[in-house]
Length: 335
Image 1: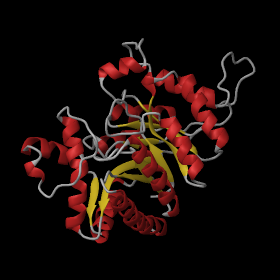
Image 2 (image 1 turned 90 degrees about the vertical axis):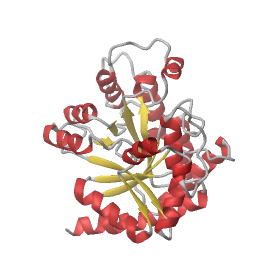
Image 3 (image 1 turned 90 degrees about the horizontal axis):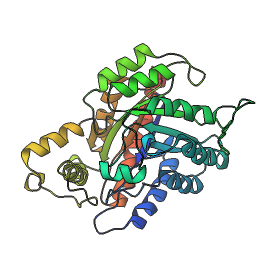
């Protein structure tokens, strides 16, 4: 493992506002930079009462202006919602303002419900243009040919690193075919993780962007002084995910001591399986569980995420995780 990074959904907590969530994001980004995280990514979601990062490029710009060295980017932008040229201009502008720091992760899903997807892009086509859109976007970031009729300004020649994100074999195959880095959404959809890693690594084709496979594993983390406290804090994310699964999305709930009183057994089992690629507990427990994930999947990089209702507790959780991941990274380099 070469690096460890952080994914933030800018959660809006119960009793709080979007302004609170965005303020927390800025604070967490500064904290992540001081704690040694390599990247700080934000994700595009729309029509979600509990997530404040819908205007992803705008939030990335705010994070970039509040930090100095940490890489910042999208994990990811849902490309079917946008014209590739617009995304090239947005991220080309970010890369021009903050050179050498900007990443662009691309997802194929709309990141929202069907009605909202149509509101975002009213003339959506039935066929899947994602591969063509990725190639078009890569072209806008590349050096322009003399006869190019359309250029991203800013954007052309910025060479913004583009990642493919996915939770199935589709993204793994596309990333391998194009020779791009690949991040798997194992923090909420781990079912095909092992197959996707194998597919990506075995079929990877070197490209002008990447000479050999570069795989990022995403994992949940919730760390606290004790195992019991960590599981109590994690109940907020479990409740939020259960609400989403049952068609009741909302703000990030407060933690509870007894999840069985809040969530039916079948739904709780589904949620626990979806969030199983994770580490929860005391510093010792989190280090052991993260080390086990790194040993099993051997990622080039790991990106952790976690939603905790109390902002101070969330900062502590990522501090504990950074200490564990720093030790694991040093051990990986020494091996």
